[in-house]
Image (cartoon, rainbow over all chains, first blue to last red; front, side, top):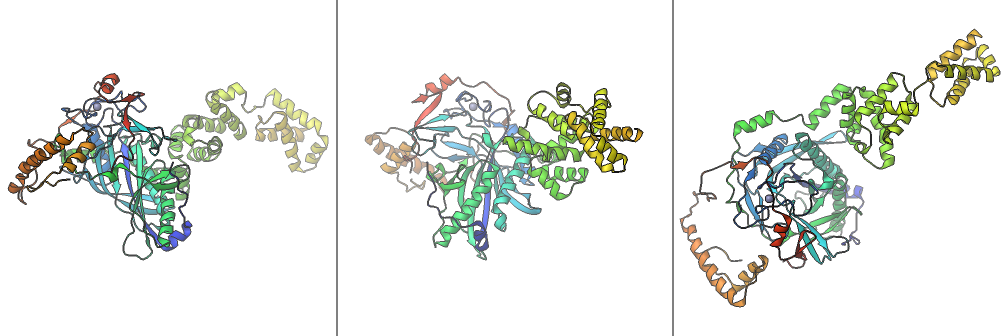
Length: 503
Length: 105
Ligand SMILES: [Zn+2]
């Protein structure tokens, strides 16, 4: 494995004091269509290798591609959501290169005539809005997957040979390219991350991809360059390939800034190159890629006729766009009456959707927020999972809050009920029933416990009778102890007061 | 690689390079022959350049059609055995190819 030992790094604060970064992002989104881009092969993730191929996606001589209408529509919808201009006429192009992941010897892509151009996406970092200009959104096909055999870690270096699976070859892929983003300074790593997160949420809201970074249905290439503060020209950029988590996007930009600053400080020159990101160390290293090997010799794809989206149809697609994440956040913030900072916490904790669903299931916004950002966030953190990874549904959380509101359980018992839900014992009501967690009403058992507490502490009772009302707390505590927390403290207090005054 | 102008000449080395990229086994004698033939082909095609003038956009399609698409529907695939039968080598249900790095320029 290539390591990065030897890269000198400048402290981040020091980098941004003296250098101005420019970032750029190329994001690939694998569309969630049922069939591939130019043939009817299925796109199921995780299928046995080479079981989802046909003469078209294997590039057999004589086979002819036909474009998937749903993929074109999805691309236009992504473009519209990003405020792009939609081309009235455009073509596919062949991007020629020899590499085993592409059986045809070329990737069908778009070159100088992308479907969508000139859009933008506003992202927020720490209450500050940054506009990221979108250069283009185009449609192409995914490549096959190589498995490198013989190398120590399954990486290409040191591999003895490679094994190719073409199931993924030909799945529709949308590439979204930003214009260079200058002027973000120290915020560059966070802006890059926020951009990818917002783009992911938009694509998800459109329902055109499952955008699962860990499965590779959303992949990012991150460009970074540095120039001395005040410089009129931008520096030479590097392109870090296949950065596959939000956290990695941020780390990749940060690392490249620190590394490039050291190179420039030493009077060196940053090489325009492709680099690989290493998840374990958060570092990048130079990588050779297929991209450097060839001139792509793009030319219009003769086997596919041009796409000419009808203006009226495009307009209808625009009108039919769903509520986009930014609008949704604004609406929920208003509905819930939250300050912006609280909203940011919710979003950053990945709890927005969960809270929304919990509220929809009947909880108050305040209770839903309290649970997801408090107890549940703690549990998720302990378990090392996302909130969505917890074995509790928003409906169950809403049920918990209802049981508390109705007085069936108190907060302490609710946490025990949650234990049961997370342990798979059923819904909250079921767990409360099975574990006998319900708060005691004025039952015989509770009356007995109250009487016993009074009988067991005549000195405390005397103090209360003498007017030291706060001494009552000790008796409440005693009752709560004998009932193992299942009594309602207010009820216990009232019962004690009744008895002590009467006696 | 050779240009497509009429005075172009395709060298043996050009043909050898392309043959290697396309994984074609070509003999020494064929290199000479193909170089000559490809040169003739390119010269012939280059005559198009004499007719093309600045105000004639390059044509990519001979038929004035647009928006030929298919609905997003799954159709049957080839069986894996059939797919791999045509491969020079296969392993674990996958195409086996020589190591990738180090053989490209
Ligand atoms: Zn296919």
